[in-house]
Length: 376
Image (spheres, rainbow, N blue to C red):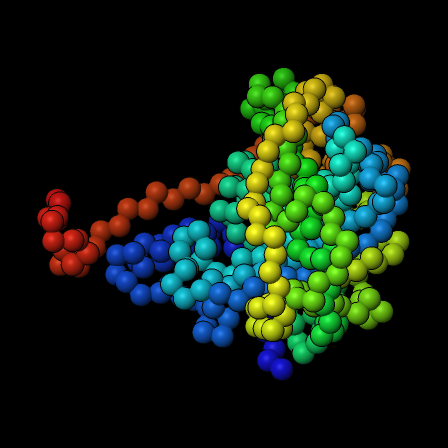
C-alpha cells in the first residue's frame, strides 16, 4: 500500500507573502507555482476523528454563559487534510490545508451539541476568515496527518510545543456515524464578539456578544443512532494510543484528560471506494444561525478564549492551580484586573510588504483580451 507523505510544515507570514509573489507570477505568466500537488495527491482528502470521555467537572467549569453540561462528558479531536487539486493552488490555497478541531459536549436549552474550544490550522487565510467572520477558534499551528499501510499517525504543534498526538490502525469496517467528521448533534456552539482596542476599557468591544450555532452540511441536527454501511472506516480502539504531551495555557486542551475512548473513524479519498459510493447522506446544506445575545459582563472572563492569553516576558499567563483546579479558557478576576492595568502593550514586529510588479510590456499585452489596450 502506498505511503502518503506528510504535508509541509505550516506557512509563516514570510511564506504567505512568498506565495503571493508566486501567485502573481502564476496570474501574469501562466503555469503552476512551486509545490503543486502531484497527480496522486491532487484533490485528496484525509480525515481522522477521535471521540473520548472525560471528567464532566472539567467541561462544566469551562462552558461560557448560555451553555450547560451535557448528559455525557465527551471530547472530539479531529484532523482534516486536503491537498489542492490540479490548478487550485493560489494565494489563499498555496499548498496542503490541514486543521484540527477540538469540541466538548454541551447543551443549549436541553438540545445536545458541542462547544468548540479550538481549531488550529496551517493557513493564514483560513485563520482570519474563520475566526473573524464565523467565530471559529482558529489559530496558527503545525499539523501532521499521514497513513502508512494500516497505521495512521497525527499530531499538532503550536508555538514550539507538541500539544497532542495519536497513532491508530484502520480496519476495513464501517464506522458508526457518531464518529464521523464534526458530528456535533444539534450543532457546534460558537460565540461572536469583538475585542476592545483600548485594553484599559476591558477586553470586550462595543459590539454585542452573540451565541451562534453552526451545523455542517450532511448533518441532521441530532446525534445519529443507527449504523450505516458506507462512509468512513473504523479504527481499532485496542491499537489506538492518544496522548497530550506538553501543556500550554494558550491551548488548554490538556484540561480534558481521556478517561475512555468512545470511537474513531478514518476517511481517505480512494481508500474505500465502494463504501464512498454506496453512502448517500441526508443532503442538508451547511447552516449557521444566531441563538441568543449573551450578557457582556457575564461573558467577559471568556473574552480571550478564541485568542491567545496575554504573554509577559515570554511566559503565557496561567491561572493558579491550572490545569487541575482551574481552566485557562477564561480569565480570573485578578487576571482581568491585571489586563486593564497594563500601561502599555509590546507587540511583536510585523512585516508588511506592498508588492508592485512590473512586467515586460510584450507579456502584458498577451494577457489582455482583444477589447483592451495596455496602459502606461
